[in-house]
Amino acid sequence: MTLHLVEPFPPSWVPRLWCWLHECPESNFADDAPTTFAAFATEIEQRQRLERTWGIVVDDEPAGYIGYLPITTRLGSLHGICLAGAVCHRGLGKIALTQALESVWASGVEKVCATFFNDNLAVSAMLRRVGFCEEGLLVDHVVRDGQPVSMRIVAMFKPVPIVLKERVS
Image (cartoon, rainbow, N blue to C red; front, side, top):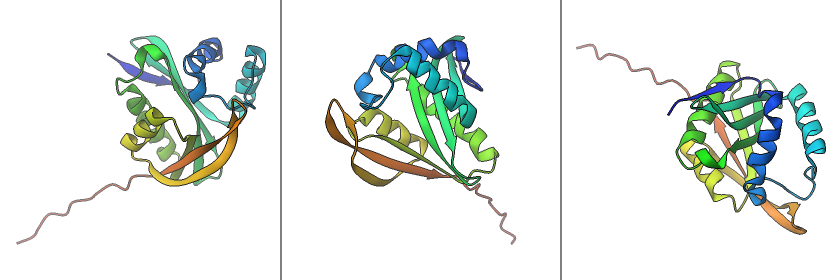
């Protein structure tokens, strides 16, 4: 199985992204999210102007999306991670996110945050495997299905290379 990223996320893949997100809508949408494809496509078009985005390609097929919103030159936030159901639970999210983060770190960013629904255990586990650490709980932060829902916030700092020194005898 091969995986690579394309940057930016190709606009022609937006219908696929809409479908991928709807494979598990409770993990992806609060009540204020776009409810039609047209509204969603407009939002993604607007986000493309401000964000870095990547398409995930698995075995030469479109398979996912990663969005990253710069906040300052030092700090940014993940703004969407989505894999097609057909490729989930194979460790590909970790590989794709690690590749995207390598590009973010190379641009000088020192810290990346991410928020997700408190009950999204799959994303929580994947982010932890990549190296994100818990920063807090955003209590009743959004509304989903008419009910307040809490969100988790996690963050990762740019890894610092370890330099081993030779012992001199």
